[in-house]
Image (cartoon, rainbow, N blue to C red; front, side, top):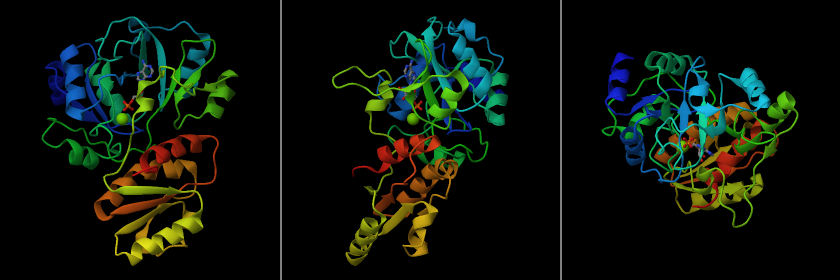
Length: 317
Ligand code: AMP
Ligand code: MG
């Protein structure tokens, strides 16, 4: 922790565990430290970062917290995988929000993340600790694979239990609007505060969450996404005939359709699938020329976030 704090105060970056994915953190107050993060990841300059703080950090020092329902969301879901977007007071580097007048703030629940954030007691700007557009890391090994030689320190907190990035929710308006789906679902937010919409960018409109426009989370091998498991079986057999190294990514109920040694098994519940998706994609890309993914059939709740990540990782080559 002392080493991490020293690096951060010198403007460096440190990888740390959270319950969603591993983060690459830097002092959010420093332009140079924040720029360093974009450089290390090769992240597009207009994709803003989330500021991570501990539960007792003074939120009012960073943002205008003027919506009563935002307090309910914090009390219900924090610490946890929910990022809230507020009107910014401009107290952190303008590079964090890429010139937007809002600031995204998150309080992670992972005990290692909490300990780290309490120890450094700084607002930590952190995107996922992977090379931009690669699959997000859910273990210290994944971070090492992407960033070895580029950063001085990884805090190893074991595997991330959640497995997909946080829900991002705008709390500047009359009611909450989800900009990115995740483990805190629309249904859960609706239950807590009565109303919640999921933002869908209109044709030609400037997107409210710039990260949404980028291809994301993709493994290094080719991928194809199927709705019909039978079509995946046919494609699997065809690939095999051609001599390709082909693997299947599917929920447990379809696993028996394929030889077990080629199955990357997502499990049965949406929470299982969220927790396993990125690990399996990283495992698959090491051994496969192509991963054939079968889209799970369930849609609502937490599954919406899982499907969003699967679509981004597996739809298209
Ligand atoms: P990552 O750190 O890679 O998980 O990406 C952070 C996500 O949060 C991206 O999708 C960003 O577009 C989104 N985000 C961060 N800050 C803001 C903000 N001020 N307004 C809207 N979206 C944001
Ligand atoms: Mg990311």
